[in-house]
Image (cartoon, rainbow, N blue to C red; front, top):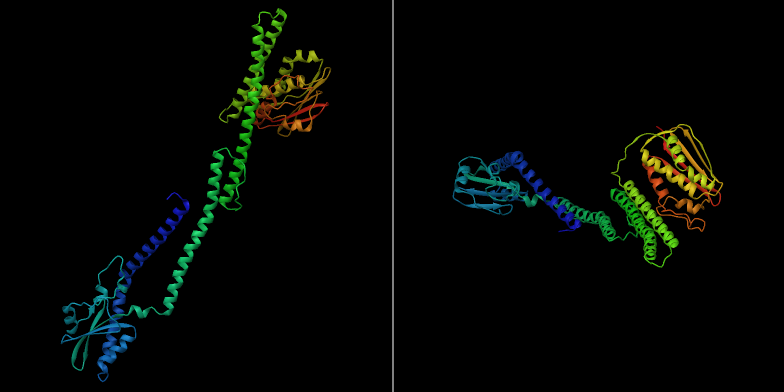
Length: 459
């Protein structure tokens, strides 16, 4: 029984059967504890009224009186001193009655069979159609003693109204069960859809949407599941792209190293070419080393468990240090580097934030024009620090600006192909700024330079 639907059906039936059983036991207990004695006394009173009528109307034949009583909804048993027994108003299912009980009633005692009827767990005494489950009173008719035993005729108590009500209850029970089965199928169907979608996702099939439009908890679960599926699809694509880029970026320098290593092994290569090839191998090795370091750094940023040390950091001091470290680069291109920034203090990891300024200023130099400029400004606005780095470099198109923070992205332009890079620098910047609850955006025009805008929380 693995199906949730079949489990629901079995549980529903079990609940219905259990409820009916418990209800019957409660009613049966209530009857034996509260109603049985009252029912006995009430029927004793009716039997005594019958006996009184018989005794006061000796002219009415005894059999006729008993027939009338029997047709009015009672089962009667009449015994006389000679041992004759007569039944009226319908037969008893069990007609045995001990002789001692008959003799006791003939001698004037009252028989409380309903009150003393044995208690049974699954049988209500009220419906037990046995002669012992009666009340008995003595009757004197024309100077002869009789014992009259009576009980209500259950069959006659169930009128057409009772039958109609019983049928209605049965119809309601059946319709309720059918309705519950239909509702259960409709409720479980979305779970089946989600299960199938989960199987597809397990096989890396993220296409398609989940056809569940309800607004209940399952509908909300389906929407959350769809969002998760979309994100997994994006992450899967990012992973594939990542592997493709990594493979490509590692393959190119490795092929170069392999090729020039083979040339270096050739004894006919001149000393000048040998030195040139060795320089290329060294350059490619450094490129691989830089790529590996940046990949490891990005991986550490991706791990949510990585918790860097957070302290008070002077943004102005860090940028000034970065400028001093890159002065030789500025001199090579004759760049005009200016900084206008008050003391800006934030809270963060100094090494990570230093990585941001180094990447941004290095890019501003790398993609700049000779005799160009780099302007760095900073200011406070409400509870935020704003830092802008503007350069006069080659710039980017709108489409390239939107992809600039993607991992391994490099603009495929002839003017940038000669610039070495891994395509990870701005991705690292974006991750670090996000880790510091900040924002980063880029504004650029092709041929007119680039503006990077960093926002960090103020301490």
